[in-house]
Amino acid sequence: MKRRTTVFLILVCAVAAILAVIYWSHKTAVNTGAPAPAAKPPSSSTPAVTPPAVPKVTATDPYKLVGLYFSSLKDGDFPGAYAYFSPDLRKTLTYQAFVAGFKGSSLTSFNSSSPRVVGAGNISLVVQVPYTLSGTAGDVAYTATLRCVNITPGTAQADWRVESLSSQRAGAASQS
Image 1: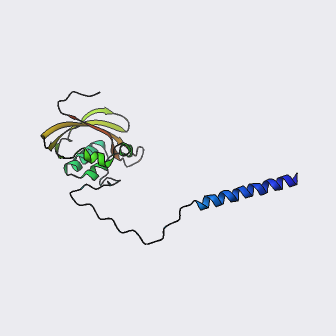
Image 2: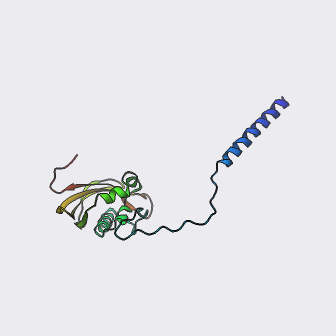
Image 3: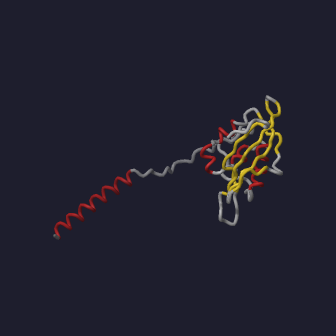
């Protein structure tokens, strides 16, 4: 019986040693060479490819979020506006697709002073905000519907972000 136990332990140790060698041989080595040259910043006429992960100002309530988001768009600060998106929205709407939606146009006005509340929950608020885009077709009025959520519920400092958004030309029939 002792001999079987000894053989079993030797086999277990041998398998463990083989697995350890395989594990360590597949680890990626750390590159200690010279650092890569710094990337050249984009020109001011081209939006940044990678938006900031954190907004410049934390939106402590949904109404402040709406104002900050639209102010960033009006200023042409697409990375700043995109920073107010929730992590879930960033997974479904890339920064490049977001910016492409404004190609050839600019936000000229918005009214976030009294957004129309169309839905509410414990940590969410759905609002509609009128805004105007100026582009090759002239000024066109739209209504944006934003679902705002607090991504830090239960903490002392709320952090509201846009979780979903859609726009509809003003006066157009409502979509379901």
